[in-house]
Image (cartoon, rainbow, N blue to C red; front, side, top):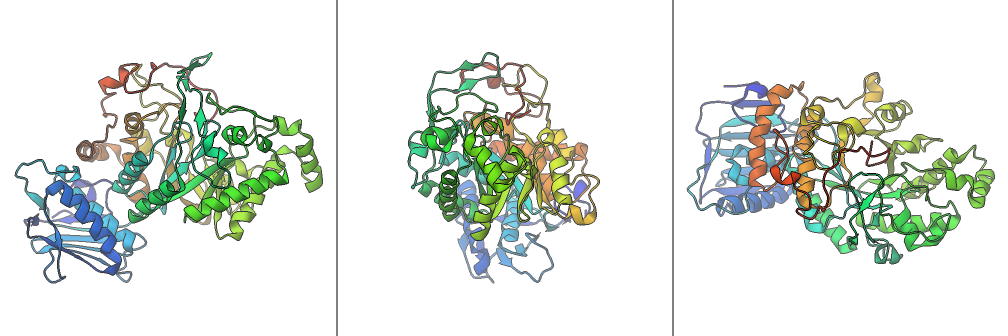
Length: 546
């Protein structure tokens, strides 16, 4: 029997809080295996039937509780904690008890990991496989409430099917937040019915910068796409069934070229094109009443689509040059008694904060929203190192940690010249795994303001699903253990479990970056729709993002 999760013969990621194993045979799934669930666990039962049924070819029918070999239930009195679960497997069957429906779902995810790796395929292989669950007793619960990943679909659009696949991969790793970056200089990716030109013209650009060479090189190909409101409803429902919250981001008042192209009156200088380059640009929103009304209407449609408590307003990398030279911006500063353009940005953000708060939502923004003052209910996402998170927590704001050096999935994974378009600083799997979350120096009360963390995939150089997989995994796998498990971390102990977990990703068709170096096809320019060779020049400061 083993009571130490680190030395358990059962290989699980993320590492559960407690694992006990013994010499019993466990449970073998067969054509007669029945499942049951109470009313609150029926969603997980349907998911388990669908996923395991597809992989194994077994019918996995629903039966009465007394006849079922796999039983799922919710019991908030079981002392498991938020999103916690208990999984017991022996020769008689398997029982998953969750503190809440999310806990049952995570228990079922662990149950799937106990099976052979072919449980992650979409159809049986036609071979005789023994679908055995080992005898275990697992008690588990997450360390942090916010365990997220951001997907930028503004720079390079990812269609709905890829977003749904990404949600499945988040859920597989017990991550519970998908932050969708929906708008930027290079594209507007969500249908807003009141303002159709946002997608009619704002979702397409004439070409895209490729690589990081100077002067920039362009591919000469139009790029675009957007999600309809029905697409969004489908994505949100799909994620909800997997206990993933989808948090939308509309980036203001900078990073708004696509919106200004669609409606030039939103900007300070009239009509401009949708952006084709990466970086930070001078074009910003005007701060007139009409612009505020426009975005309040946008956010009203947004909150009808996304039930998330949090709505992300960006707020990052907003140059002030146009405001310094703008008569209307300077009048706003005078009329509102503001000190400067930094306070003007804060004033703009507070107008949106008041609007969202009145509708029962909470504003979330990058740490620049701290500059010039911040409304009490706003939550800060710290990306420029840990300093923004520290300042926000000390000021009484909730914080989500996403510092560039350890959280940016577009950053290079080795110094090899074979890495595709290496940008930023080196961020290896072990760097992600070993890095901390709660900044040092916070008091216990301030530390409780840290809701959790997330990894961010900026997509300037990610124009297809294969490249997405390569940049995200297995670094996101390492992150999942960091935000879930409460154990002291030891990468040397983690790596063997990670290598076994990669077999699951193989079966699921995930084209991750191998631990030993790039896959050969990543070194071939012009293949799989990239159309450019890697180069070694680092980008300038920006959400490329250095």
